[in-house]
Image 1 (cartoon, rainbow, N blue to C red):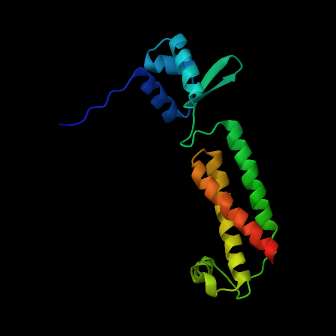
Image 2 (tube, rainbow, N blue to C red):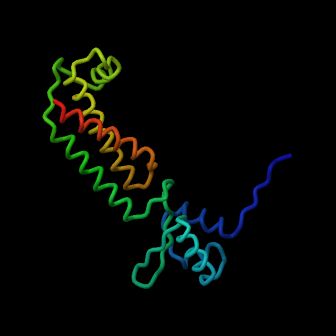
Image 3 (tube, rainbow, N blue to C red):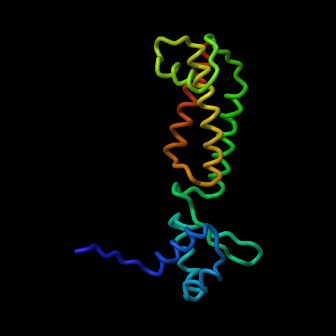
Length: 168
């Protein structure tokens, strides 16, 4: 027997907002055929629960979908600044490759050899990796399309890199 799922009008509102990313309260009311006053109450509750965000442009309320990680705009901006600071630190490091690393394939070899590689080559490979992944993470955070766990993992890798740089 196929499993049926029950959806409510509130589920429809959340789905509609997530599909459109940002929608005026009026447009949602028209589309869902539900009075604005009721949608406004639902939106307030959904905002308190961290499911949606309400933003006002002049006097028009807009419903905004939160990303998979549920971050609001202030949290996103704070994370972007933090990641930019990490990227700036990584880019400032004047680490030279001892064995003349030229491309990503060379870097993968260094990282897989690990213990047998020169410390400077390992740091150079880590710098290359961090620079690339930090740039991508900044892009993904701005789209609210990266999990908090992925960001935390990247920040830990940055901290390890920072400590290793101080050791040499």
